[in-house]
Image (cartoon, rainbow, N blue to C red; front, side, top):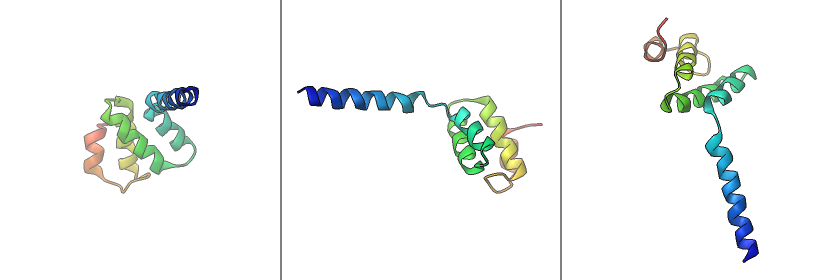
Length: 81
């Protein structure tokens, strides 16, 4: 019984970390460390959650072709200069 409770408690603690993860901050970190593909993936998640800063950064990445194919139409969807 105590082993089952330990497993349930551990699972709950591990799932809290993924719930609290901030995809915008993860995108910034990925971009800073030279991983534009991870940055784009994280920015897409943050945009879906309504993060305007991620939307702007994602638009800039489409504008410059960083981690994605350069696409001015998608750039305009995300970021208006």
